[in-house]
Amino acid sequence: MPQRYFIVGITAVAALWLYIDRVCFSTLADPAQVDLGITDEQKDFMLGAFFFTYGLFQIPMGSLADRFGTRLVLAVSITAWSLVTAATGFVNGFIALLGVRLLLGITESAAYPAAAGLVKNWARPTERGRFSSFVALGGRLGGATAPKLTAWLAIALAGLTLITTTGTNPSGVNWRGVFLIYGLCGLIVAGLFWILVRDHPPLEANTVRSRPAPMGPRQFLRQLGVLARDRNMWLSGSAQFGVNVGWAFVVTLLPSYLNKVHNVPLEKRGDMQSLVLYTGCSGMILGGFVTDALRKRLGPRMGRSIPIGTTLIGCAAAMFLIPQFSTPWPVIAALGVMAFLVDFHNPSIWSFAQDVGGRRVGAALGWGNMWGNFGASVSPYILGAFSRRFGWDATFTLCGFVFALAAVCGFLLDATKPVEPEPPVTA
Image 1: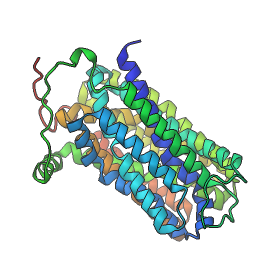
Image 2: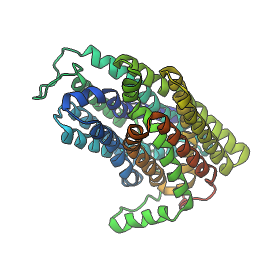
Image 3: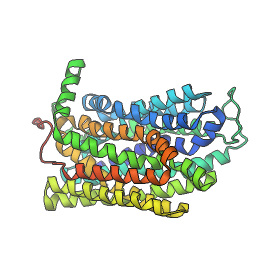
Image 4: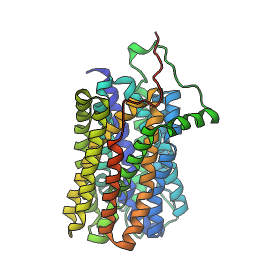
């Protein structure tokens, strides 16, 4: 097996654990809310807090990966977010829980910008779409596994005391123990990643590359200026912002929606949420091959923009359809279609950033990811408040309009126009 496939596989495992630690909280949000005495508004704010810092630190962390190498930055990132995950089990109030959610966003923010740089180092240009899809698929599989695994683990740990705190447990759910176990497993993943992964293929070990110089405040602001003046970056960021406003509902508010609107028990909520996310995973596999094939046939501009815009139109249609349903399973089916199409478009977004990023590919991917996660950060707060005022049918319709606007931005992307020219590589 070519070594580059092995490297991509290990990176996909790291992405899997990234999403397990990220998504598990939404499954446990209701029992944690009961035990910690948190209001609905505080819970919505807390669910979005992770995505705010995760988005805010995308460009700085992507720049660190460009400068110091993906292996070091990713290994440190996995270690840090695993420690924060374990610490979540020890919180005793809203402020402490908000703090660890903000820290989790910071520590996970390096993952995908660094992974994009790693894929670029190991993949040929015509492989970037499917290699990116496999890494992103690892994350989606982790996100799909997290709800069901988390619900099962919380039930299995009932009655066991893994963490001693001064708080009470009226919910009867051992959510603290789940976070502790996930954090310890993440430390093992960090160690394996450091041992097995290298930044570049062995044949390129002695190649001299032009890496970005160490960045002080002035250089960092210059890089931000380069990105901020680029039309492609704004279109990409706007598209991802809109996508995540709608998609983040699945990993934030869906369990609470099923609980409050349809009275679905905890274990069934986990099954339904996992089903939506597993449905999306198949789109991730297919999307990478399609965008690479379209790039060969139609060229880089249409090969990247067509799958992005078309799939987001489909997402809008799925969300517009949901208000017609009165039972949970048709809603889950429509959300599954939406998740499939979102994951189908993701490899095109990654490949687009690699096509136009030049030597700043980590920062370029980080720019789009930053705006996307700003969308995810406001999603639970806006959608939660909107649903309380206008009802869930109006909320799903709002998501449909946002997806439609994101589709327009996707159609306008042009992968033939790099943000910054690629420097020459000399032996």
